Length: 212
Image (cartoon, rainbow, N blue to C red; front, side):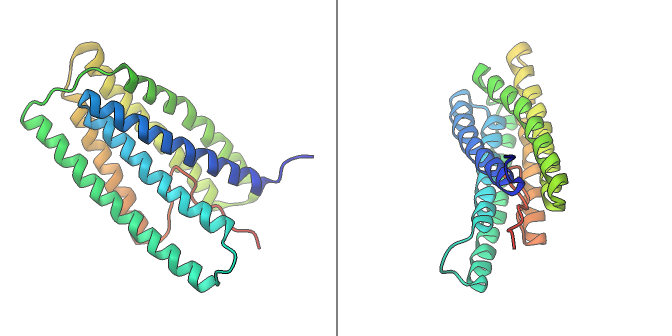
């Protein structure tokens, strides 16, 4: 018997949220040890993506005993918190990136960071294909939009890989804070669209539509 597409979409959501949490922990730790603000920023973006995905899974699964009005109010509060979290983290990463450029705080080359970026670059296109196929099967425009967001995460992994690679191979340390500023732009964009649309759409699991 073939799995229910709705359940497949939910399993994908669980997997992606879990992966984002793991990616956040490893990226932030590796970035802190190497002094790489690009890697720290990448990890922080993964953290907010996992928060976003967690809210979406919560909405999709639902909670017994909650009225639709109470559920909507809780979701709205969670969305507002996640949206502003994007901006707070963008400000932190931006400040650190500019400081490193101005004071020439040179990050250490990090092989672990290169591995993280490579794994993400391999995994995100696979998730994109799976989400795109499921979105088409379900007729879900929101899941299709989430697939595009996942593809955007793959592009961010490319940028991180380039920045870390330039430092690791040729000692071009300025690439690290410059890539961090690109991540700042991504964080700011996601925060803006989250607050403007009043809904979550992230690499984690945007737009899973509740049945019924």
